[in-house]
Length: 274
Length: 236
Image (tube, rainbow over all chains, first blue to last red; front, side):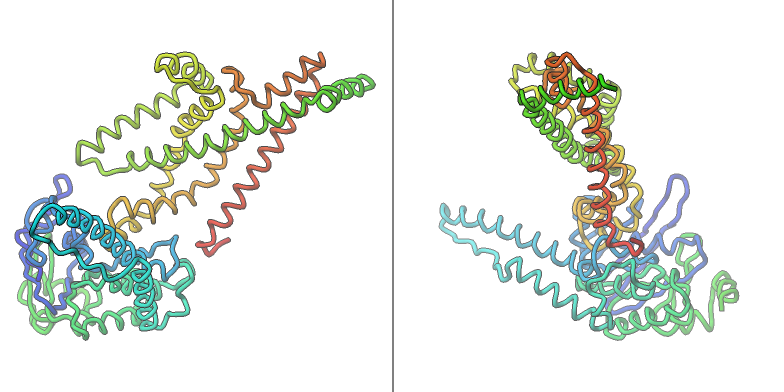
C-alpha cells in the first residue's frame, strides 16, 4: 500500500532520516518505537509530506507523493493523521471540526465536475462522438447533510454526541484526542498515522484514547503509530519498528522485538523503558 | 466668564440659525466614511500582504510578491499621510489623467495607508496562531489557501482585534488632515462656523468633544465585537 524507498530528510546540515526503506501492506498495524531524536516523528510526518522529504520516494497507491509535482492535497485525503497536541480547530465547534474537510472537499469536487461538464457539453455540440458527462449525484446541500449525519454517527460512536456544538476549549484532553481521531476518520482514510497520540494526555485519559485506536485496529484499519506505550504497541501492532539515529534498526513482530531483541541498541532501549 | 456666554451665542447663531449644522453633519459623515471604508480597504489589503509575507519562500513567485509587499509597506509607512494625500491628489491623479472627488481620493489613500499598518498587525496575528492548526488542515487534505482563510486568519483576527481597534481609532483622528486636499470633514465644518462668527473658541471645543465621543463609541464597538469573537474561548 505504501512503499518507502531510500527516504532521506535533512534540516540544513543535520541529517535526520538516513535512508529508510519500508513496505506497509494493507491491514498492517505498525508501531514505531525508539529513543527521542531518533527520527520517528519526522518519518511519520514525511509519510504524508507534512515534512518534504529531501530525497527518496513514497509510493502511495502507485503514485510517488514525494514528487513536488504531485497534488499532495488529493492524496492526503486518504491518509488520516492524529497529532500529539490534538490540533482541533479552535475557532470551530466540534461538529464543524469534523464536517469541515468532507464538506469543503465534497463541494469543491462538485464544482469542478460541473465546470468539466460544461466543457464536455460544448464539445459534444461540435463533435460526432458524444462524450459522457460526469454523473452528479448529490447537491451541495446533500453533501452537507451527509457530512453532518456521518459526523453525528462518529460522535455517537465515541459517546460525545452531546458535545457536538461546543468549542474545543471546553473539552478534556482525552475528549479532544478522540474527536481528532474521528475527524480524521470522517474522510474515510485508507491509512491512519498517529504521532504519539497519548503523550500529551493526563494518565487517566490515556486509556480511552487507546481503546478507540484499538477498535480501529480490530476493524482492519491500516495504521502507523509512533508511540511510547510499549504495552499498547505489543498488544495492538502486527509489526514493530525500532528506530535509532535516523534508521530502522530492527523490524519484526512484537513478540520477537519485546522478548528476543536482536540489535544491541534495541536491547538497551527496551531495558530502560520496560 | 460673561464673555463665554456671548461666544456661545455667536456659535449657536451660526450653528443653528444659519444652518451650520448641515456642514457639521456632512463633515461627520465624511470623517466616518473615510475612517470606516479606509479601514475596510486596509484590512483587505493588509490581510493579503500579511499572507504573502508569511508564505513559505521556496519558489520565485512568493519571493517576488514578498519583495513588492515590503516595498509597499516601506513606502506607506515611510511618508506622512498628509504627504501621501498631496502626492495622490496633486501628482498621481493628474499624471494618470484620472478624475476623482477629493473625498474618494482621501478614502483610497487612507485605505492604502492603513493597509500597510494592518499588514504588520495581521502578520503578527497569523504568527501567533499555533502552527499545528495549519498542519491539521493540511493533513486533512485542505489546501494552504483554504486552511489559511478558514482556520488561521479567523483566529488571527480574534487575537489582534484590540490592536485593530487601535488602528481604527488612529484612523478616525488622522482624518482631520483631509482638508489639505479640500475634502470636507469636521475640521472644515467648524472652521466655517468659526470664520463666519469671527469666534473660534467654541467651535473648536465642540469639535474636540465630537472626536472624543466618536473615539469612545469606536472603542465600545471594538469591545463588543471582541466579546462575541471570544465565545470559542473558555475564559470570557
